[in-house]
Length: 494
Image (cartoon, rainbow, N blue to C red; front, top):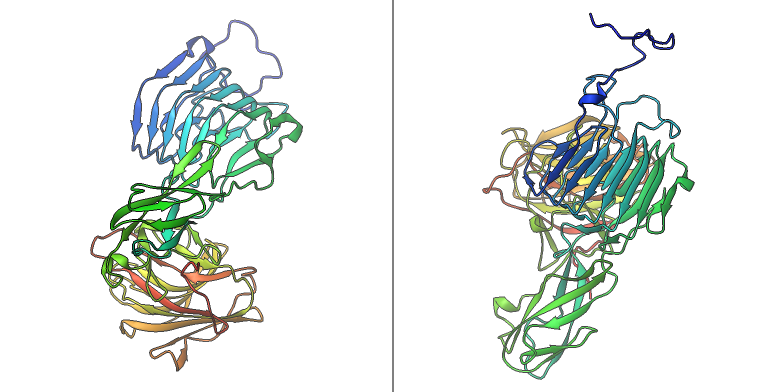
């Protein structure tokens, strides 16, 4: 048993206090390192003496790149920080939140903070759709002079040509189109904190400059860049200009008007402005003077982002083919079922009311829990699907529902294993009926209509996924998508 040199005050009672030997807390400097592909957090640092994390590269952390805790509740392993400087680091491909301050105090009170004086200055972030800064119980949290870009900032915008093979002397047009969607996740969250600053930063296109405040007075947040408790989404494609890699073959003006000059090839590249500078996008190749019937002259087609949006976009696994065919290859990221919530490339229309959606689908499931079909999607934990499911070697057509994370399969039949079939979901009066067809004319109901009054503003679309990746997978193809009999084209129109 340990004793103290002096009697403790009566206010110190068992289970009310945790004691830390502050004489043994170190100062820390972490500088000039590369942390790469770590399956957990990059750094966990909690000491009340000065901490400097500077000039490092954090690449591919699965969890937070920098985590500051203070666990005096369960593990009793760390105390507060009072002086932290995170400066001139590069954060690439981070898990989220990128910088995470999460003490274990059970009472959230900005007047009684755990941590103090944390500065995040002059760093570069290249992020996916994750939170940038998530802090709890901090008095004095600065985020200044940082540069924040999307991971896909070089591929989120592409050039599309009306004519890939113009004749010499002809004129045509090129436009810039978005290949992705704006990120939905708010960049900032402050809980039980005060004296927060976010200033003098630059942000790339397609980011959501929202700060979510919980037990934090908005008057304690000094910013002219970030919107408090409301979305401020920077447009992914505010405008674009163009360059030609070979003006002797084809010239292009800043509005996308092309003049073909002489036989040959040139790359037309879209240039998109942002706060961080300019981003060259994905170019389109023009072949002046080529035979219009040759394969090189096939049109470049992209998803119509005015009609469709994508959940957890994976554009490399998605293709638009001629004749308005959407091709989705399973990414292997995981499924939607129950708590998995990792499926990518869920392509959704903007329709969110009652009606009938029908799609012509081709492709058979191959392995494991591979699945593809038609979905009414409100969120990862609230949806109804009619899908082909492989069921580890026993393929079925399955009607699945998930409500608030509780997943069920009320109806299933053996998959007819016909390469092509038609799927239909009809929603009315708070119920959804599923049916399928082998010829596009005669539809067979799959079970009885199910309750879907909880779906609210669900949108209709198509998923295709597997729980792991395989190079042997073949894509699923969707065509003839209709809503209430009206075509909903995948192709981005001119």
